[in-house]
Length: 390
Ligand SMILES: [Mg+2]
Image (cartoon, rainbow, N blue to C red; front, side, top):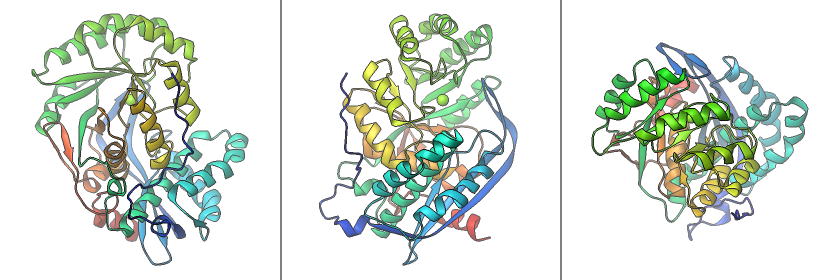
């Protein structure tokens, strides 16, 4: 499969936008690093989250216009503090006071400028996550300045995006499904990777609890090798999940993914742990991937993920942005899907997270988010401002 190589300049395409509208000069960059206790851990095949961390950032231009971003920081537990230091010590001096013609130019500049540090430190992920969060803030700023939701900078963006409930853990799967159903969801993603016997029982009970118009997906969070993944997919295929997500490690060789692809009828999903654009291109070129899932605050920001999303949709894939963070990340993810379009869904974590619940106030009805028309990211700005200014 040939991947259309773009010029990496994701630009708003509304005819009445001129260059000045999307130019940006950052005058200040602030970060707030937070964590809150939760009563019930978020359970995955590789560990439990005992707290909900968050790293939010705010930029302002010389006119006082603000833009907000979020940096993925779920793991390890000290990750938020480290990324905050990266932003303050390595990125602040690169961007503050510099003129950029667009968010995409800022993204490309940082990606190029920080490549040596990525190589020297080996901290590819953390640095990419900081760049992604800052990119989201740049898009938020230019959209707020234009008094438009980010998606309205693009001419064919939708105001409605399908959504699904994710993060459903093996200990309380049916209760979480029912709670999500009451919140307007009709598609649900179950965690697996806790032993084949337990997984099979859970998948069967889960599948048989679906109502006629409902569907489900399975997420193994990189739990297996190829042999175990094939075993699991053989067991699960009778329940017709919409996809099987990360059955093996995201960075396993293409030939292993292709082996899975040719041996199972369940569509394969991945992308939240791809380290760079080349990994997306390789998966699309090799054609083993069915569902493409970048996380807008983990790699790429809106600039990188719009480009990958368009390539995924052009290749006939489902584009389903990953999200498991605070409300800014989710808001950016929803705007991203609205811009990219296609047949995908936005992922909404069904586990409690006060940051997400307060900041992202849009609700799901009949399996869809009907996006608000507030400027920028469509978040409750007063809640975010309170985090920075108190
Ligand atoms: Mg996942």
